Amino acid sequence: MEQEDLQQATLNKALVPIADQVKIGSCNMRIDPTKNQKEATYQLSLDIIKQYSCCNAFLKTGDVPRICMHQFWYTIAKNEVTQAY
Image 1 (spheres, rainbow, N blue to C red):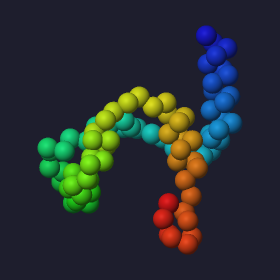
Image 2: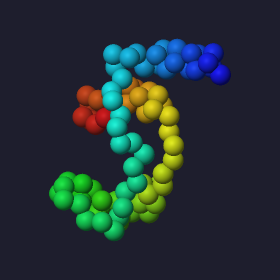
Image 3: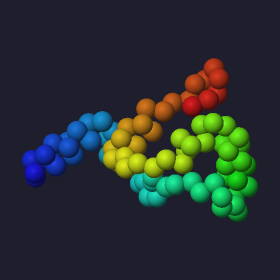
Image 4: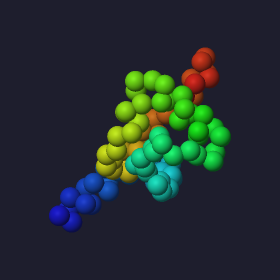
């Protein structure tokens, strides 16, 4: 088991260097669509999401290893043409 942990740690460092990793605190949180939020932007986003059939996708939860989240965000880049990420 210890060997597997060491191999996984080595793979994690290869996928996303430690210097580029960010601390991920409250991840895999569930959105409660019935609860009003104090943050106006968050509430507006929630109201918009409720209007679409994809809303249920945002209400699902799952356990995602942190390295997968790091790897995902590490690959995000800004498109200079569309100014989107």
